[in-house]
Amino acid sequence: MGVEKNSDFDNALVITIFLLIWMVGIVISNGTVAGILLLRKRLRNIPNLYIVALSFSQLLIGTFVIISTIFGVNVISTPTAWCITAPFFELFAFSAGIFYLVGLTVDRDRAILHPMSYKPTIQKTVVILVMLTIGALVYSVQVFIQYGINNSVNNDQNDKMTSSNESHHESSNVCNILTEDESSDLWFRILDCVLLFMLPVIGMVIMYYRIIKTLWSPTILNTSSTIRKRKVIRSSVVCVTSFLICWLPFYLLDIIHDSIEVITGDEVSGKGYDVARIVFIFLALSNSLINPIIYGFLNKQFQREMWQIKKKYFCKSNQVADTYINTHNHTNDNKQGCSSQHTSLPS
Image (cartoon, rainbow, N blue to C red; front, side):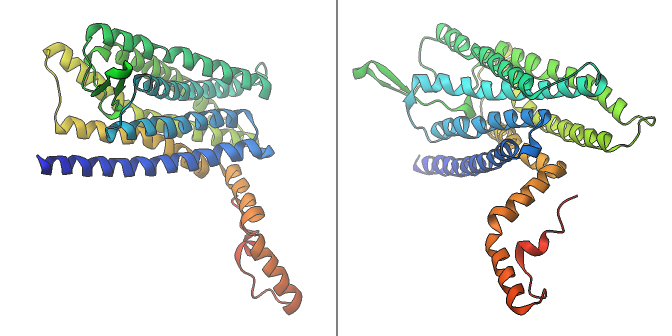
């Protein structure tokens, strides 16, 4: 028994360490992308506004959702309200990310296929993003409905509710996103899969097919505008693809698991299922790390702005030293650091 407890403790410690690494990476990468896109005037365009909104949704996943998961992994008791709020923000962040990706796709579809009639502005885009955010909040209210149904089906505390503070008439629970597997959630899982995967994917595939067919047509001229639009579409397609690859296994596993429990009436558990769920959770969280990397690699303008920021804020000491050397020695042989790199900006 003692060996088993030590093993569980070691597993929880390893998972917690990886979750903290993921959290730091998500916060730094998405915070950097959002900050640069907002602060650098040359990057303030309509597609980038959607990327900023997507980064904020990923930040929510990287903070609130991961912290809640760490509590559950380490069997830390939390108020019942926390166990309801955590899934709410998880679903909100996920659905908002999907809505922003669909919004970006619609914007690019109209801008490229209907350039004469579609006249977007920054102000209109902000309004659309606010509406999409409200839509994600409204959609996520289903978590509270789901919680009420689960309570009515099973009045006893489930395996996530491990302790109770009867003297204060409050319940103190252990809620763990990594082990959420209520079979009564099946219909909500299917609803999420249809509304947050199938329909958006079908719509985005159709729109990107039309866009690619237009932009990569042999008859279109390779102007600077066309090349710039192609780069935007390429990065958008990669972001959408990574989002689906990372999140789809997580939801499919839940649907398959809950379906088996509903059909057979038996509880499905075991080490294999637990390992698979943890792996898919980390795969889903990895999307929040991948998006900023994809954007940085595929957006040359973003790379140039990063380089300019590096020169301005992180290379001043080298530039001062170079100036001193040049002034006193009248030679360029000793140039080092950032000032010698100004001619190698990403093209």
